Image 1 (tube, one colour):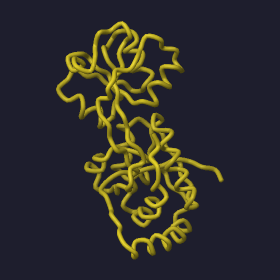
Image 2 (cartoon, rainbow, N blue to C red; image 1 turned 180 degrees about the vertical axis):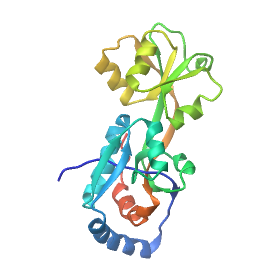
Image 3 (cartoon, rainbow, N blue to C red; image 1 turned 60 degrees about the vertical axis):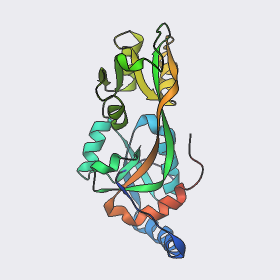
Image 4 (cartoon, helix red, strand yellow; image 1 turned 90 degrees about the vertical axis):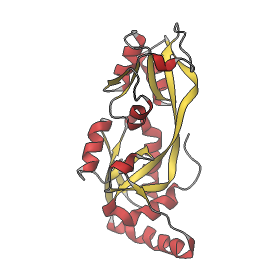
Length: 227
């Protein structure tokens, strides 16, 4: 079966007891027949976790087309109903999109680090007084950087180049995509600052029109978190 990616965001539905289990068994069998495919918003930096969501839908017999786009444009497409959901976003993302349903449990816990040039004396105690670049459209980054000297880059490559060249002092990023980009771009003068700045649970979101999929996909996602 050919697999694609897709996604959406909002509030949480909770199901308990025997009735929920019985309903899940019926929905798991019936929903896949009704929903052959989905189009979800995806971000390349969450590729490992996007795959987990795609594979969970595959178990239900549903193909997922993962539509990669900048975060800001993805949010616009979600708000206008052009996508069926988002593969993975922060817990409070759905607060801004009443047409989205948050699927429990979280897909992963997202760890955010600061990165600096190796010749810099910046550490976890004094970073707030320095210039910081993050990815445009990242709600988590915007929340962390309120009131600070912050800048936005269209993609991770551009952000790393700004840091490496000394145009900014710090980069706010994750523990997966940033190290991969550092290696791929051959950047040798950048390193992480520990401890992490923050950790966030990250969730899969579906459009409210796919409410019947929430319980089946929740059951498929239940298990060890992808680190």
